[in-house]
Amino acid sequence: MSLEDYYNKLNDRDEELLLQFLGGIDDELYGVVRSNLLSRLPLPSLDKAYMVLSLDETSKALACDKEISSPLPVHSFSIQAATTPLAAPYLDRAQRAKLMCTHCPQRGHDTTTCFKIHGYSDWWEE
Image (cartoon, rainbow, N blue to C red; front, side, top):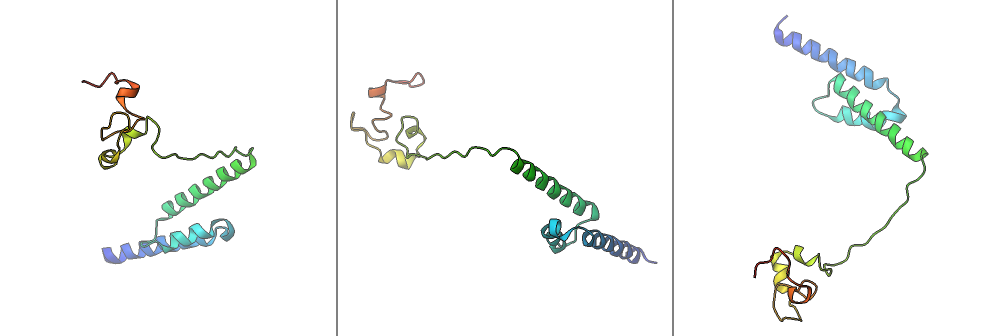
């Protein structure tokens, strides 16, 4: 038997073992994962398929544990436009160029970050 024939024979055997393994698992629990594995080209190895199914099983168990434990409180929040003193420095150059301070009539900042109102920072060199 040639090397190529021997390789193909073993490869066919590996595929048969994979199909046998995937055919024996619970369709209700692992049907989606099995379909995903079978749609891959080339087919995954038996070890890879087992690892994927095992990870899926673990994630389902963790999700089930979280559902059983007390529900977590739900919090909501909103994001405000850049109007706070800390938000204005993080505007990009084009956005800052549009700003106009009404206190010291200079461009590049507004009254929320005007040094003449709030004082100069330690890092600022005059």
